[in-house]
Every structure is written in structure tokens, then in C-alpha cells.
Length: 249
Ligand code: NAD
Image 1 (cartoon, protein in one colour):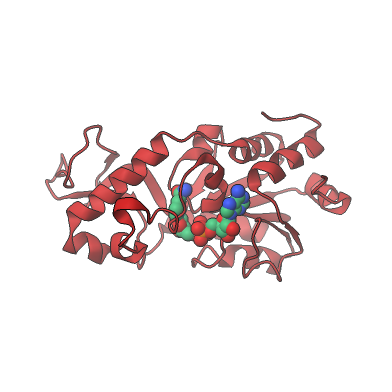
Image 2 (cartoon, rainbow, N blue to C red):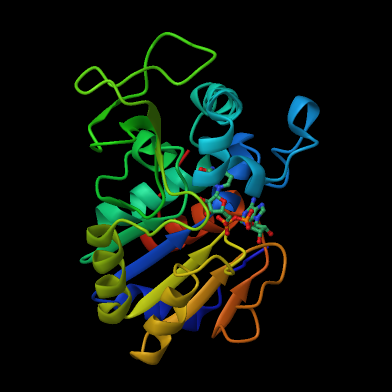
């Protein structure tokens, strides 16, 4: 089935700059659980707010560390999917392209995307609580957060928790990319987590065509100029093929 009307393809072909925002949905086809799905088994009795907050880490650092160790083990065994690869292909052929992600899984980079703005940090890094020294995630699994090799304060995942500010340089770059683009694609995000949820609307206010790709409706759906109600792993490879004539595998 052709998901892409000619008018959308025409606008995408003539766009000087395309900006993309992705959320947990783009990694769903790689088998990475969204927060809601991640409340399984051992972790079913906790909500993300009990695990992904500075307060949770202060109260029970071992529990939070173990939850992230578990989530990271799921992520490191996952592979990028056809949607991630199609976005890397779009970046290669576009005249201007910015990829912004709310994901912490690093799968866009693994698929070959060169420039990725990570709004919520990365699960592949840690940083220390006191001084913010950053390191790759430790190779050895431990039950408790290990100490910072430089200053001895506990290491935490280098991700943005509920109630924390987003990294300013990433946020500024994301807002700039939203203001300057001709087409904005919102992909696999429920479009409710702020401030990322403002980005599609800012793009639209500045004249961009706003396209959503999500099999389920979101609060953005009635506002978008077009909605492709299909999984990203189907819609994006089809888009690349229609734009370039090449099939990405
Ligand atoms: P979300 O879980 O709130 O929404 C996911 C959206 O993806 C839903 O609207 C769903 O309908 C859609 N979706 C599901 N399967 C899809 C598919 N195959 N193709 C396209 N869309 C699909 O996720 P969010 O909007 O990213 O916000 C929640 C927060 O969770 C973010 O802050 C993010 O950092 C965090 N998170 C990230 C990861 C990750 O790194 N992979 C995983 C879990 C949570």
C-alpha cells in the first residue's frame, strides 16, 4: 500500500531542510520496551517515576542502578531496525537534515546516522553525581553504582530523569532546527513529554509542513498537516524508496 501521497513527496523533495524528532516508538520494532512496556517481571511493581528520578536515586541508588543495568542489557542486545536505517539514508541524501531523538538507546548512531541530537542523554554513558565527570558505562556489572574514578562520588546513568532540565546545547540546537526546517517529521513519539512536544508545533508556526508517523493517534494528530498511521519500520523505508528509487534493507 502506498502510504505517501504525491503532495507530501513533492514537499519533501523540495525541502531545503528536514528536521526529524523520534521517540521510543522508532525503537519498538528493535524490541526495546517503551517505559510502559518496561514495567514487566521484576520491575512490574514500580512506575518510571519511582525509578527515573533524582529522588529515587537518592533514596535507593542500588535499585535505580539495577533497573538501568537491566534496561541497558536489553538495549545492547538490540539491533537498529529498518526505520533507523531509513533515517540514516535520508540524512545522506538530504541537502539539510537534523535528527533529534528522545531515545537514550544509541540505535540511530548504530544505524549510521551521523549527527544526532540526544535530548535525554545516553544509556551508554555514566556521569558522577558531584562533578559531572563523564565516562562510558562500566564494563563490569555491579549491584550498586560504582564510584567516579576521578572524584569518588557515585556514578549515575547520563540520562535526563523526570524533573530534570534537558542539556542546554542539545535543546538550543533542537529548537533552532525546528525553526529553520521546511518539513518536520514527528516519529514514534506520544508527543506529550515536554519540552520535546513543543518542537513540532514551533516548526509548524515557522511555516514547516508537519508530518506525523505513528500507528496510534496522539495529541499531535489533529494538529499535523498529514499523519501516516503505520509503523516507522514500514513508512520510512517506503519513503526513502520513493524519494531515491533505492530500497534500503
Ligand atoms: P512513548 O512511549 O510515550 O510513546 C511511544 C509512541 O510510539 C506511541 O505514541 C506509540 O503509538 C508509538 N509507536 C509504537 N510503535 C511504533 C512504531 N513501530 N512506529 C512508530 N510509532 C510507534 O515514548 P516517547 O514519546 O519517546 O516519550 C517517553 C519517554 O520515554 C522519552 O522521554 C524517552 O526518553 C523515554 N524512553 C526511551 C526509550 C529508548 O531509548 N528506546 C525507551 C523507553 C522510554
